[in-house]
Length: 300
View 1 (cartoon, rainbow, N blue to C red):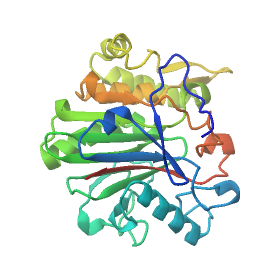
View 2 (cartoon, rainbow, N blue to C red; view 1 turned 180 degrees about the horizontal axis):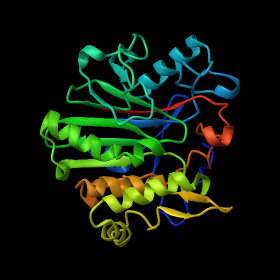
View 3 (cartoon, rainbow, N blue to C red; view 1 turned 30 degrees about the vertical axis):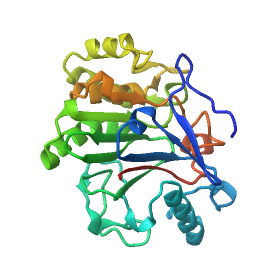
């Protein structure tokens, strides 16, 4: 396995797994939960070629469908499941969340979805594997240990500033009786602050987000003091006037902690997709010439 570029000032977080030729990443926090299988794909172990090499999991970016199907079969085998048990989002940068069940198995891979505009999935059906897609945006994993339920979401900057993480907590409460204190949550591989420059207009939206969360400064200090995350500034000046470096990892941590998930139930990646664009697909690093990664979450 090639060496990963990891975030400075952090102890290693993501664990690297290999099943045959397939390589994927996992979180210690989620791996410690009984009956939970999860993973985040890499570019290793598939059959796609060119800009999609090799583990592309998108049917919509120009890759050959048969190759993508084979890639899904290989990922399913690595996770000890089947593509007929997987169900996919239809991502359009919303905070729309869909509850899915065993009747949805295979949707987005071997069956038509029958829905659009879905960036988050929740279920309490065992053996159903939730799937979301990424190439710099933020994966959010949720496990409710008490009520036997899980959730998985896609949260780019639009989803983050709209509070996707808090939306997931509320939806799981409504569907399954989930309490925030019952949750463990993980923020997956995505673009880091050093790599993510945004406009003043985007920065102002994140300033309003921070102001909208009660005791946000106390939460940011708590995350640092408890060793969850070493930084306290969601925004810092960019490399040119009118630009800012945005920390989506910290913004999502603030949202999740603000929604009531305990500090002990939170874990954040130390792996940036853009810094590791040879190992993980990155939209920004490739200027859009790329495939898709995927996050997977299921209960055994």
